[in-house]
Image 1 (cartoon, rainbow, N blue to C red):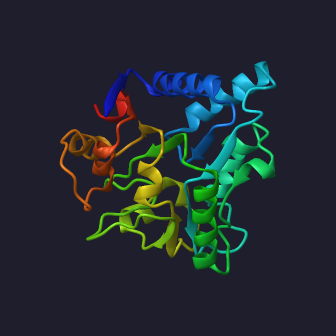
Image 2: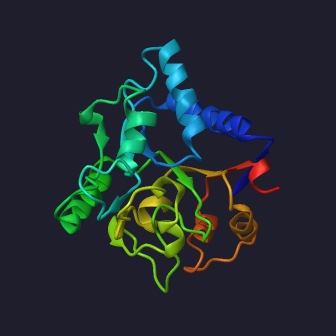
Length: 237
């Protein structure tokens, strides 16, 4: 893993944007795995600004969503889809034929997870995978456990995940997660791991030790040859 220590959130986001812009210049139709949440939001804002300056920017980008909450009340705005649409898909003008996602209100999550897995196998491997890290070391919604799943799957949520800031005020919390598995993530050509926000210091310090454990899923990133860890130093102070 390559660790990049940036002085603040804006500098961290800019560093991530430099990696994305470089890879897009080499492959305009690359497959981009988009994650919800606050950590990558600065990157998405910079990408949208670039789109405003250069209309062709991201015009061939293919996008697949990393994960989604399940079991929320229908119509709830507290979904990963809502977040990704507002911060990424709509500002960048990603058309539906270039975006693959999972419905947070699906009535058949098992089948939808199978469809997402099939899409990853058809379109992949992922060229750039955007990740954050949970306070318990989860990546995507792969929670600490005795074993981890390789493919897109339904997963039980840890209590720390249910306390996620995106869900504050959501009323009825999600009852499960739908997420890419560890193989999906580790087969990505490049991974950008953003470490930002409150409560991440302990997880970051644990990540520094190259010991692999299913009880700290982010540790599996040590097995990948091309991970850029972008650290907002204010989050680990």
